[in-house]
Length: 79
Image (cartoon, rainbow, N blue to C red; front, side, top):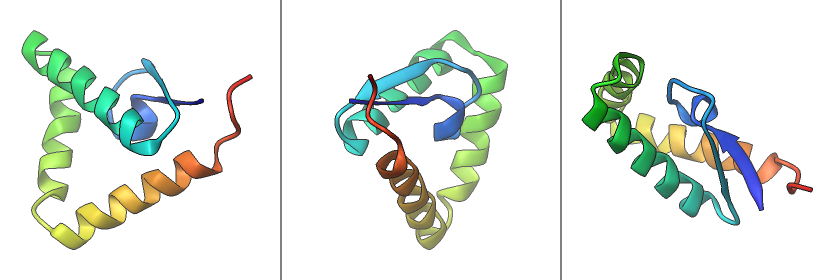
């Protein structure tokens, strides 16, 4: 099990997500983002705008995901 924060995943807060795989942690982060979107959280909305701009370039988006996956892989297992 590894832990990453919303901020580490491109978000706006210190909420933590724990998962065995990067795919699962990304799924948890996405769910959190949707909850914050529904609440109209300004900081998260700003982070989402930045992500939306990144998504304009498939290569840039893939590089972002690859970088986040490497960060996840480099993390020590939770104790």
